[in-house]
Image 1 (cartoon, rainbow, N blue to C red):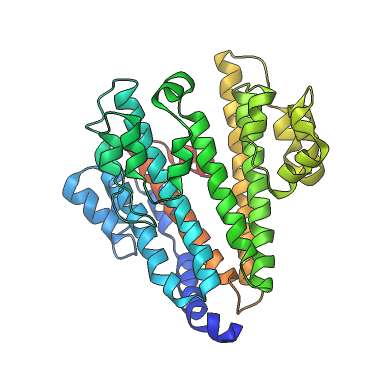
Image 2 (cartoon, rainbow, N blue to C red):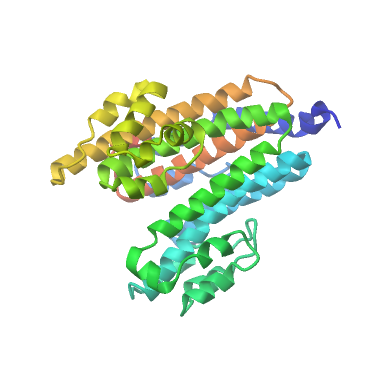
Length: 365
């Protein structure tokens, strides 16, 4: 099949949907709504009608937010069958990211119940049970009396080998951080493998997007764990994703084995992304008083807003590129996820009675 026949039908459909999303005032209307109930009402008649319906029937905002995950899964499943095999596999790996985050939530609840001895009865209902990519018994995970049962619940999935490297004793001692980092690295490895299998033109587009996306993830790792949480250099080397410009350059220079990996990483970031150097410099690495922590959190939010704006521009450029490529598909899912995240953020802010100005600041608007 030609690239035109591969993408003509689905791209035409997705461009129409993108046009609707870009012309929609849904986020603006929700921000201006005086109350949570009125903000929810702004979802009526949109593709998010189900969220409004769930909230009205249950009065449970988190149950309504859970329906966003179900919407995203349904959206992927609708579109993937129209793609050529290599692109379909790639999109399934992207969907796997959503599954992995859901799995993390279930494991955190197991950890809370089994190791911290906290009740999770009010939290378990917010884990998505919908089949995403792999069959996972989430209830068995959350109710497991031994860690071996958690492993059994993911048998036959790529997550089994990761979980098998941990034990109840090791997790009791170190917490879930090493396990979650291992899952993240596994997914990024799957992502790069899927990109390599794409046809040349699609591979070039995906590499341009996701290599930089990995860079942005590594920048947040640097500022959050290196500065904000004072992670030691030896542990930081385990967290940094070994891909993208920053991860590849850090490995080439051997900076993660240096005496001051944080300073060396900041130099790499400065060379590639000078626009956020000032915000990184403003983050204080040693003081732990409340005022300093609050200011550091503000600087991190500014960095996150910059990275979010970069992503938006990058995906918008894809729409202006080759019409018969995976670019339109990637742009659609990015814009869809962005809208979903903003809806979730606005609803949460409204539940806490945040002012319109505070909501706009948090969203970077």
